[in-house]
Amino acid sequence: MAVYEGKRGVGEVALWRRLAAEFLGSAFLAALVIGSGIAAQRLSPGDAGLELLENAAATAAGLFTIILMFGPVSGGHFNPVVSFVDAAFHGVSWRDAAAYLPAQVAGCTAGAVVANLMFALPAVSISVKDRATAGHFLSEIIATLGLMLVIFALARSGRSRVTPAAVGAYIGAAYFFTSSASFANPAITIGRMFSNTFAGIAPSSAPSFIAAQAVGGVLAVGLVRLLYPGMTAAEAAEVTVPHLARSGERRHSDTASESTSATVSEPSGPNRG
View 1: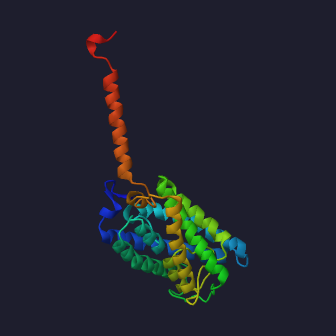
View 2: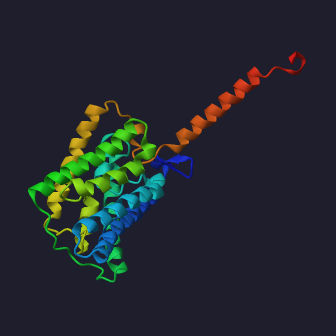
View 3: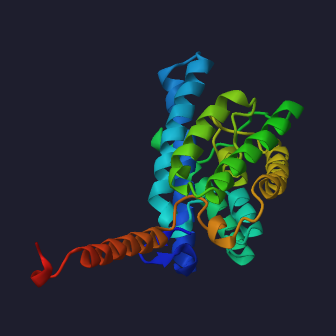
């Protein structure tokens, strides 16, 4: 469970604050993905490989920082699949996961509009990029499954402190090892429909991507249960950032133990040699 203001867990932060964080984080994510795609097209026209590399590098680095920015408030999901898989492990309530979804979709849509405007394009331009193929469908299943395994395996093994970097690295790599360029997120899939640019997706292709992402999420729940049985709600609540309060309590406990040991080992005045 992440901590807000160093004291409270994510579940204890007011819901409206968490929704605001999910909206803003999702908006930054969409602006990052779409904006860097537009920039790549303009910087390296005609070189698809270099354009993809620039887009992937910006997305990987930016996703890392966005999770760090908003994770302590909302958990830094920005992705309905993450929220609902987390709910399956009781990291967040089903009610909260359902509330996150419209905030994530609205944020990604707003981010797409902002990205278009930043590059002097029409605020909304519906993408005509068709991505609905069997290979893309399979790619989205694999991309989403892998992302969930990264997140929840790190949480289960007590390594959630490195999750922001690991998620960024995985998404950057998945841009290249999947034919779909790893959307792995229904909210960003919807947002990318509103930009007819490098990172866009035609509305007719979006349903197959979202269906594949849902399948990947369901498969991930089963695989996490198989590989990491016994995941607790506390572990699931730490899917993107560690429980700072717990760390603080541990440090306080360690300090108290050291103080006690020092007091016991130090001889009193009359007995000093």
